[in-house]
Length: 442
Image 1 (cartoon, rainbow, N blue to C red):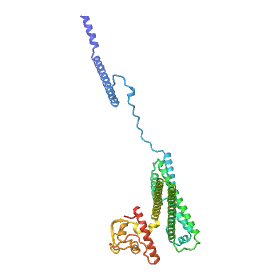
Image 2: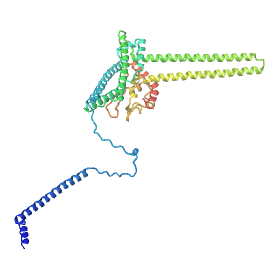
Image 3: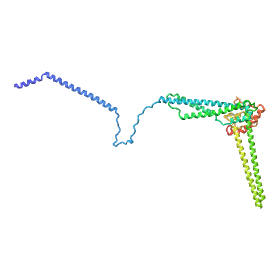
Image 4: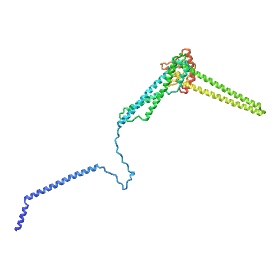
């Protein structure tokens, strides 16, 4: 009994209330520490899972299926190079382009100055050619045949057409406009191309050639006027002297043609005579009728051949005469000074000569040249008086009698009427040529 009581007392001593409280507190602390540990590990796991999810979301997923067999490297598509933004021109490129445009502008302005000089030379030349046929300086030239020949040589000398001045001026305006447009662009770095530069060179060459031709001819014409300034004034104008010169040349040509025709006829007659004499000799020497008959036939054959040859020569001479006369009329019809005298018919206008003289004029629906058949058929070319009425019709403001054609001074003196008769004959001669040139209507 005593032993059992002692063990019971010892056990009660160890499990006192104080010990129990200490054990309880320690258990609570352990449980709290364990819970804090679990909570902390859970937050870290969540943060790591979120970071892993973000990494996976930002990483592109390669959905390319891996083939079960090796891929041919020759069939693999090349990777696309990265696209870089375009870079603007450098200041050096812009300065270089601007310098070339400024040089192009300088050359264009220099060509313009040369063109203006050519225009002035053409104007002076045209003024001299318009004034000399009727002024006092022209009368001084008209008094000397050699000086008239020099004037004709200058007038008929081939030279560039003055109308191409307008085309050159338009092209230069376009080049200058293009230059100003490019110089006005601050970021421009493209220089004038080769075609534009070559076109400017072409214009410069044409301008210099044009200026040289007209300047040289103008100076020669001015030298001719200066050389004849001390000569006496002739009674006839330079234009009349030129007409006389043309008539003399035509007469000289007709004389030469007649002489050539006479020579050909004489040679043909000589050949016929020689053939007849040869036939006579054959006939005389013939001992039989057959030989005589052969001689006569031979003479006839020779005569026929000679006559055919003569006819051919005469026909060729007439054809040459016709061609040379047609060429002379063509040159005369193309002469601006000659066309100017008949501008009342050659210039387009509303007034037509569809009615005989004395009737009211006919107005066309649009400006037309005059009909040559109307002038002949309606009697306007009957004589110098009706022709003077047609070419000297004065403008009138009345509606039905309005005349919009240039007029020729109406003749007053005997000399002017003789000139009007000459103009009528010249117009009849040149009108068919003007019809072919479409300066007159049929």
